[in-house]
Image (cartoon, rainbow, N blue to C red; front, side, top):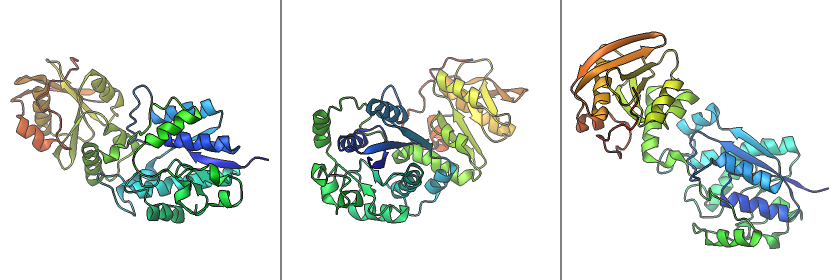
Amino acid sequence: MSVKAIALLSGGLDSTLAVKMMLDQGIEVVALNFMTPFCNCTAKTSSCKHEALRVAREFGIPIRVRYKGMEYLKIVENPKHGYGRGLNPCIDCRIFMHREARELMEEEGARFLVTGEVLGQRPMSQRRPILKLIERESGTEGLVLRPLSAHHFEPTIPEKEGWVDREKLLAIRGRSRKEQIRLAADLGVTDYPCPAGGCLLTDPDFAAKLKDLFEHKPDYDLADVRLLRTGRHFRIRPGLKVVVGRNQGENEGLERGARDEDVLVRGDDFKGPYALLREAPTREDLQIVGRILLRYAHRDRGTIKAQRGEQADTLPVEGALTDPELLELRIGHHRETAGKACSAGAG
């Protein structure tokens, strides 16, 4: 009877190679993929989840997909082991995934865990002492096999037990991908459109938006987090944030995503961006929102329409905000040119 293992499969190059190496040794592999609101996959046509599904289908192995929900978001908000350069809790993230994998091992009757980790590739989470800490806190000590870097570590239980031939494992380390690319050619792995992926938590602009959410809305939910990926975000006052669409697609997304208690603001007599407010605004607040919309529509006056559920109100506004005024309210690093016109052209 073959030995079964759980493999963390992101759909990227390293995890794909690790799975292929195990299959070539006759290991029965069950892939585990995590969905997250923070994936910033570099693939042009598909997400990391879809890449993982594609790889699993190509290799003929089952895959289990789990979503990192509110439990994970609370870890991001207050990680035990701190953040990297952004708001990325890489160590706590790996512990979370390893714990989930450990549970799946028990469910599937698997004997060990496989990852595509490479020693020294990521400065925060792939250093030797940190990898040992992750195993210790996730309850996977001795059970994590890293085929690409195995010879830089002491033999694991699957190697000691003879389930895996250590001589067929590798000693890759560092940040270069040259050896992985050569290995991919040797193993016949030719399609890996998402070799690195990416995490939005490392992006300063997104991290600023998420930190603002944590600070100002302690009762946030997943929809609030997903909204951070859309539009320009402004903090009008401590109790009011405004999300402004950057194009027609985002305008439509804000309109579809508006809850009954949300306020959607748009130009009533001019075309331009929409604004979504998750808190109740005063008329003074709406004046500021209107002036933001005027700025992106390149107008100095107009009438806005504020709609909440079935109720709607119109309000004349004038005096578009200046670029310095916009930047003062903007959440993030203000990398986008403030005066760039909205391309939506939606009424």
